[in-house]
Length: 119
Image (cartoon, rainbow, N blue to C red; front, side, top):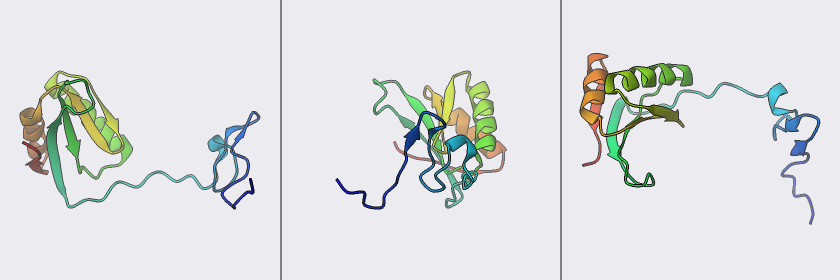
């Protein structure tokens, strides 16, 4: 099969996974830039989801538009207020359990525009 200009070396035992843009090991990537905060419409949406989680409810917070470090700090505050675990995935904060009202209350106290999404 011919190489159609999509790449070259993808993995090397010397450096590990290679960056497809600059062709250096991921740890020494010259083109790596911190991911930009996701831009949205300025409205934070809080919803409750159970899909793909074995029927367990999770409170999901989208549209915060913060950098990764700030998201992690906010998630820590939300977890403390709710008394539950949680995580940050792809710019979305997930809190274990149905804590929509508590999350909305805290975010409004911080001066954010919050909307309840879903049912």
